[in-house]
Length: 211
Length: 193
Image (cartoon, rainbow over all chains, first blue to last red; front, side):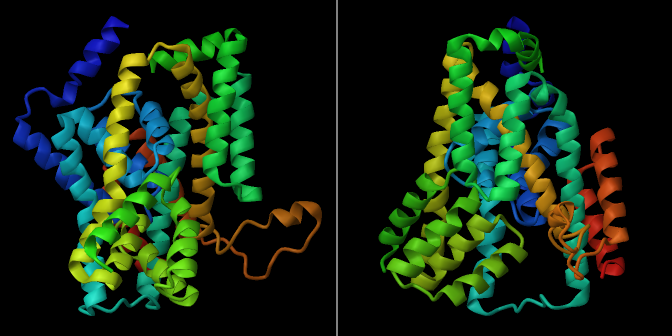
């Protein structure tokens, strides 16, 4: 636990960077993510992981799971919540604010320009459509890559396998509102712990805490 | 519609959208289309299509649109800020409590329930991306039950290639996601139909 705490205090990628530099990187990277990751949602969170955990090492290596858990249970857009999470971890409240500005700026600028009538969108253009297909394929790849990395840590144990299947099937085939599934999963998790069933899954949980 | 009112309304939306921006669509329809009559359902549909296809998260795009229609640039600013502000406080609060109560049984229980739920949702979202790129439309699950496959369903080989290569690159290497997206956009524009 001690080792983990020190890591959280001082993630490797942050040492040696000036505060101004950290704030700039937060702003600029979230600006890029918001601009190029079409659609938002989970893809935004995973793109933030790609940049801030895997490339810059600003967060602990296994922090993706904590990040996802918080981002999707707190009300708000995933893009915004991801920016606040990373920004706060890297540079406190100001960092969160700066990252959030980076996320909102592209939408704000582009939509305002469209609303003012400055640009019209060539949506029917065959090249534009093709580019969208290309980007969506890449975002599919981004999600699969992240899944492959977190799969072992989540699917192990009875509870994990059960919750994964229920959530996937519920969302895909029955269009259940994800919020209900998340609340259900939280409740089940709490009950699992209070009843003591988690001892069955102990191996799974200690691993979880190491990641 | 004054700016403060727009701001407060979107703060309210920001507090209610659980599990991301998709939860906003029914909220917007109920409130902005059906009770406030800011726009017709048809206009709303067009607006969401634009929000989806322009850079930026859909939720922020839509908020900026609504705000602009009601109050110009200040309205757009009020809506965007209003939507994002509640989560600013809530996420920071959650992070501080998580650090503090990390070892409590309730928090461990919550986390051990949410982690696999997340994986399930990500799997579902991967399928959604694929059904708009690698496959021309939703996967024909009905075929498993003996129903005929829709004639509009086909696989785009180039998109499938982009999907596999970017999975491999992002899983193995330290490639930047932005580089992957930009090159996929170029490849897609030239080769995907």
